[in-house]
Length: 332
Length: 210
Image 1 (cartoon, rainbow over the protein chains, first blue to last red):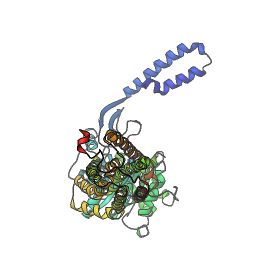
Image 2 (image 1 turned 90 degrees about the horizontal axis):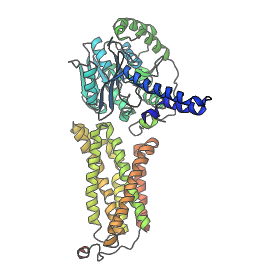
Image 3 (image 1 turned 180 degrees about the vertical axis):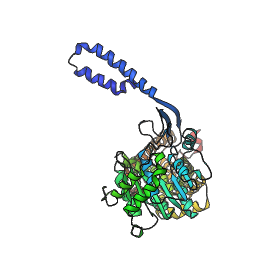
Image 4 (image 1 turned 30 degrees about the vertical axis):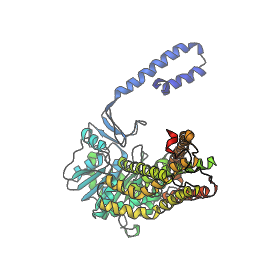
């Protein structure tokens, strides 16, 4: 079955039908089959599976391609990793969206309390803990298996200021709000796998998150850039936060939403000045360099997006606790 | 007449599973969408159906009538609809009292879903009673009714999870389910067979079976 589904064998089948030199077909078949068998084997040598695990929430696959150690949450699309670590240079942020998420620091360079929703390989909390050892970081992750993998394979270590809370983020947010906890920086990054937690996409959840932001707190959210979810999500953020920074990756299909001073209404927020933004980026640049975060370029990109008109379909319904079929919408 | 009872049993099955699926949506904002939330929901639904079967069977012994059958549908509608109003405050209260989301979701599921589901569980045994004429065919009749009501459950699950949640809000779907219950209650009231074999028939006579 595996051989028949192989695209390489399909090519063979097509060429058999169309080939003008049909009398040569035994040769063609022999050549193609041998190459079909050899190619995947050769590829397997490059890609090494380090660890495989089925958790309650997802399938976890840790694999190594040359110097990249990657965490995948799906078996179907092996090329879509959640998190990768460069073994030769562990600090380097491999993915565009993690680098983009770091630009939240432009608006709050010294956050005292940080909340991260979704652990993955632990890239963001690890980097933030190194850059800001004094900041108290809490990362909420529902899946104990993911926590185990981050610690075992991706060098994640908890310490007094860098802690994981194993809980559903929605429950965490509600409890934290009751206890009047606030955070200077909140990063939402729970939406990568094959299955989207739909109760973390809604207007009500975002309002709970908003209530957790401190007075000048910044919200950073890694969101869906493709599919109709881009429209639905944009409208949902617009409804809760009014204005937001719609940062898109230059050469990746990522979109990160940033809301500086997200706890107050858009009209009361301080205006963003280009000079202050660039100055802040210059200041952060040396700290960001080891992580390969192009902070100065990101600051320029942010400045450019500030006055960009909305590029999404405003007629798409915003997501609420009453209406949030995110998984169905993504497939449409 | 037989098809009408089957239609009613089908709708009953449809509504039970549609409601169960919505349960996940209703609890998620307070208790998350982890596997324990589904554990709570399924536990409460199974428990409620068990009680409902028992009560429905008991109710069918004395003077079974289509009117009483209609009453079951009306009552379940009556318990189902107010969910729209009290789900939020009930979950808020339980969330404040119980810290562990496992027991929180179990308690919330019990308070929110138990009553309507118990009543919905009464439909199956009661419809068996309305259709059984004698002991010989009782198994066949019960089997056919299990078939239609479970088929209704399967289709209710599918339609709700594939389409209804994509088109409507949760509260709108609950309203639709309530309206279905009320209209099939009316069908039972007016169109279900009024002639039911009385309690002297072989079904209730303990000697005939042995």
